[in-house]
Figure 1: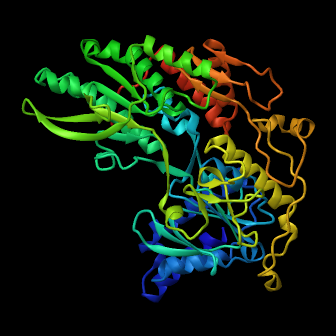
Figure 2: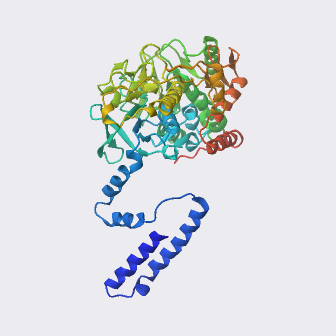
Length: 549
């Protein structure tokens, strides 16, 4: 109210100083201000009853917008708030399973938590293949970073360098390339990894054109648009046959869960939706799965891997094992430009779309850093600390590895590490005054006992203390492994799980029920818990959307 009164008085005074009647010339402005004042009052009373913002800030904010240094003024005001200065600043690089989980669980009353990531959302990666063909919509499997309760700040930028001596992260704005620095008291590296092309000829150059990765939401959007483009172009009656066959040839590189799940989703999309809308194209469609190793789903029980392989073959999917991609060529055949996949065994396949999901490589920040590395991953100890950093720098997720246990780069590892680290910070590290200059060179004391996060759901976390022994060191617990096979199929490996369940395996419809129920209940918001089954129902009853935009 006082803010709008200030604006109203400013307008009236401006009119008086210029010898005009403010009630006549500026009446539309004054009327609009009064209406907005009334509407804002209603909204505040209805939705923000606990607001404690002082109205005296309005003149200061208004002066900022009328000043040539408004942006700098606002930034300075934000950066120098007394609340932030009184708390240690924790900088988290990345918004994936590790970074987002940690940022959500850290106590904001003890720490000024800030996230730096080029992606302003958390991605629920197990459901990513479903979005690439329209089984699910993109926004149903993501959570915005800024919705984290009491988050100190989020920077949509790429971290380019970490200066351990000055304790700053040098960043680059995602849009304008503006470089800036962010200081830290504690730093958590959770930047993950990127797709590894292994230097394969033309794969990187043609990425986004005919070759696509599958790690982020924009990758799934690119794949979905490309698939629909191929079908629309192939339906053109003037298209030469060689070009039509090329556009309708789809290659998936890699034999891991992501590759297999995407291939299963693609096959289901073709059988259920493409067959209805492009029936003439069905005889020309060719699906190929390429794996350099002797089998698919290498981390699963052998019987499950063989079962999944047989199911793919039953669906007329050409599975090529012990076959590596040697390169991708662009050639002119019969006057048409054709993309060709060359394999190391000398064979070739023309294709219109290649989805590459074979291997991981370090991001530039890690590869170019001075941090200790082991096989391109940051070395950490039993407490997830980077050595020789006095307990000020940590690394979790795919980008980190403890050579003593060498855990796989999976989502469940990153999530458990984030939960462990949040417990350490909230219960133990908060007692150490890292802001005291006398503690600058003092090693952060080791944490006390922390219970490992065995149970995959927060509602069952009380069972962790009953089923696990606490320890100051990080303990990874095997929750099993799952892979879907479209509607009604899948595999679940519980043979080596630490969960209190039968040590067995599941396949077919039973695994499908476990897979869907598990990932639905693991959603981080009620909104997505509602949206996801709605999209599943829509795809099953009404089919997937085939619009390209």
